[in-house]
Image (cartoon, rainbow, N blue to C red; front, side, top):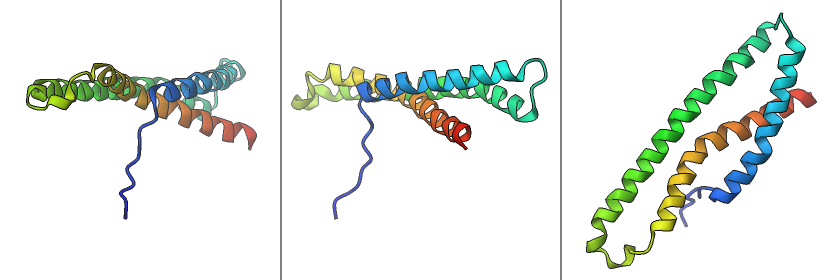
Length: 122
């Protein structure tokens, strides 16, 4: 039976999905901020707190993922004299580092867009 390894989405796909999800989330949250005014409900306060906390977590998760991918690239580069087929992979390494850093932000933004869209429709 073939192994079912989950492939990471391409950086271009992540960027497009992120470009579509971010305005949706922002418009929902800004409208919610405007409606809440000076006296937000407990549900509004939880959502507003979540906005700030998740940005900090996404930043650090992204930074760590990029650092780990950079470590892997450096290790691969250090071992490259022993493997003749690993030369010429610099562009792909850079895209992997970028993709690793974009993944946590993409995951959170698209999840928020789905969650807020469901709540808005229901």
